[in-house]
Structures are given as C-alpha cells and as structure tokens.
Amino acid sequence: MNFRRLALSASTLACFTLAGAAQAQNYIGAGVAVIPVYEGSSTYRVLPLPLINYESGNFFITPRAGLPAMGLKTELAQDLEAGVFVGLDLGRKASRTARTEGLDNIHFHASYGGYLEWTPGPFSLGAAFRKAAHTGYGSVVELRASYAAWESGPHRVRIGVDTQWNSRSAMKTWFGVTQEEALSSQAGLSAYSPSAGFKSASLFSVWSYRLSSNWSALTTVGVNRLFGDAKNSPLTAQKTNVFGSIGAVYSF
Image (cartoon, rainbow, N blue to C red; front, side, top):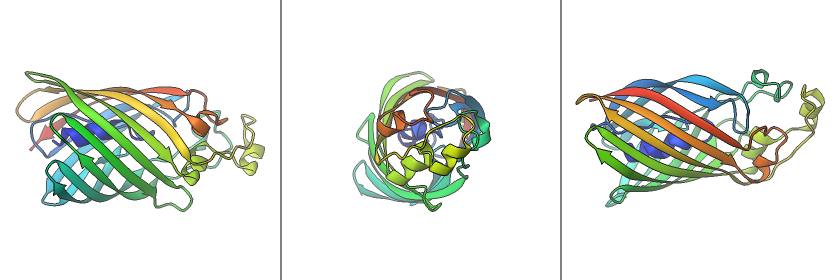
C-alpha cells in the first residue's frame, strides 16, 4: 500500500477517509467513518467506507476526498511524483440537520484534478488541485504533509496535517446562504456570501496493525478547524470538528 499518499488523504474536506500501512502496494477492504454531516456541523453521521488501492504502471485507483478515484501518474524525479485524476465527491442533504433545513441540497458529484507529491524517506509533502464537475461548485487547493512517526513489529503510526483553500464558488456552495435560502431557512439563517480564501486545517493520526501477511486493521483519528469566512458562516455550528474511522484491508 502507498501509505504516504493514503495518509495524506485522511483529512481531505468533510469526506474524511481511512489510511493504512499494509506491506503490499495493492489492497481492497472496507471500513466505517464517523464524520460531521458537513464541515462546521454539530451533527455527526456514520458512513460505510470503501477502501481500494490499485497501481499498474502509470494507472492507479486510490481514495481521494474519501471516495475511490482513478488517474494516471508519472515520476518526475527520485521521490517526486505527479498525476491527474477523476473521482467523486459527497454532497449535502439539507434535511439532515435543523440548521440546513430549507436550504438547497448539494448534489453528489464528480470531480477532477491533479497533484504533486514528494516523498523523501519517512516524510511526505503534497499539493493537489480538485475541481467539481458540477457547475458552480468550485475548486479546492490542498497542501499536505505527513511523517512516519513510529514503527514496531506489526504497528505503524503516521501523523499528518492538511490545509485547504477554497475558491469563492466552493465557499459559497458549502458555507454561503443565498437570499432565497435565507427566506426559506427553517433555522432563520441570514444571507451570507463568503469570499475565496483559506478554509480549514486538520491534524490526524493513522495507526495500522498488521494482522497477517495480507491483512491489516486501520484506525484514523483527527481534528479539523475552520478559519476565515468558513468559520464565520451562519451555517457553522462548531468551528472545530473531530473525525475517526476504522477498517480492514486485504493486500495483494
């Protein structure tokens, strides 16, 4: 398993995913994640989480934004990799929380983008750009870093940070309230039009336990903090959210 890349994905957006440290590059498995209904929500939900990583030549399938994505990669230099991908992003159903009742739904949608990743030794540094294929949903830029902090026998622990910048369209999609939505809001939210800017930062830890030569158990825990216009949105009930997940993968 490409543990470095998957650890970087662990805190992406509100779609927090599992990461692990099995010995093989390719794996398949499943888990469950506990995440806020949306970033800034005080309500949490449990989601099933598909886990798959497959690489063959320049082709790959790997989790990005919490769901499997596929793409092509190339090695630019030693420990330096670049790639492009297409994937899926979760949406937001307004009826799930009292705070969003009466607002428009954010639809489950496709996305596409590219990334650059440098993996010198136990460190991993990466940058990624992801744009929603749905008109008006905007784009996200991620800066990420992680470090293999501890390894002993079957145990491996990696810690990391993730920061995100949102375009104006992305901020308005997730944290904005239009005049029409304000009028129909069951929570009495006022209209709000956020600008592009630095949206959030996350700190996470991933623990992998090798059960056998092929099986590994995975646990992810972390905390996400909103900043700027995202923090000040009337949709934001909690500026800080926690998240966690557990699962297992079979390496081959």
